[in-house]
Length: 434
Image (cartoon, rainbow, N blue to C red):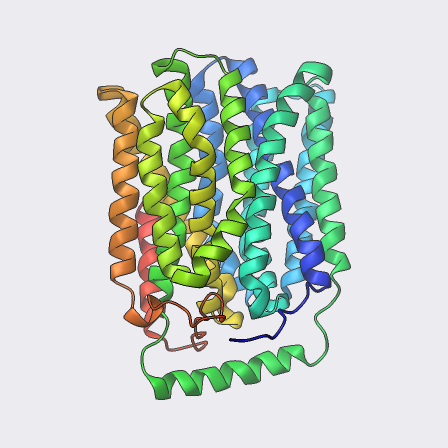
């Protein structure tokens, strides 16, 4: 049994976790404020749907290209540029309103620009994590990062609603702009990549390529990406049908949605500890599968009654975040550092496209039947896709880690000429078709 103490968090990790919280807080506030502005201006749900489309399309269309761009240039610089562009776009919205601009038009334009910026930020930030966080710290970092993501989203929902009531919507846009500038400052404070580390990484990549060619098959990046992308389907579809369930099926008010978000966030706080215990016994891939399967069972129970949903939602937060942490860590460990931007860019594009397709199909089912069938359909979809994906993975990835070793490491793939480059292109093509 190993007695070696795990490495301590470095400067990059100490700054990236709060930057993740701040960025998600700003993104959530922006979406809340823009949706409120559009709905009050046009008073139709269709107007809000068009806003969501304006947010989704640029990320699906540009994530792959930006991912390749990230792999060619400095990741920290691109992430900082993304935050600065977002800050300018966010502050431009209330300034334009103050000058008498039409609310709906400027909301669409600002959200479109912010979505383009987010399409760059996602692969840049994930590639920066791969570049700066030691592999032994990746699982712990991703656990803390998932808590930061959920806490930022939860805080934005709560803060957004109350600020609109107290001060009006303009204050939210100014606050949102400040979050982007603060995130940019934190990313800048990480500092440049130490001299020589890039050369060392290139040497390691060549060595890994030689080792991989000698040892046989490459890590299945596309299948690991699909395992991670299931989370996008859950987030996009789950939020939509949860709204309909609470308001229409349970005949409750919007206040319960805030309670549901809070309970889910409470569960998410326990996810890193649960992930650590489970992954030490089962490994990353099996942990992701267990998380998704248990979450699917919990989802069905949520549709039974309002109080059943309240009791089950914290456990849904735990299991979903456990699956998300495990899948993200497995994908990040498997991705070669020099291609991490492309891997996560393609994954983001595919996940958003698949989530949009899933929410469209399930929405048609709900409109034709009842909302509970939407929950059953989403649950079945997650079970089938997660199970089929894991069964398609090499058996070496399903083996439990050795005692005391923690979550298993996934050997990085070489930079070029991998079998999974073709699989990645399949993901990109599927995203484009969706």
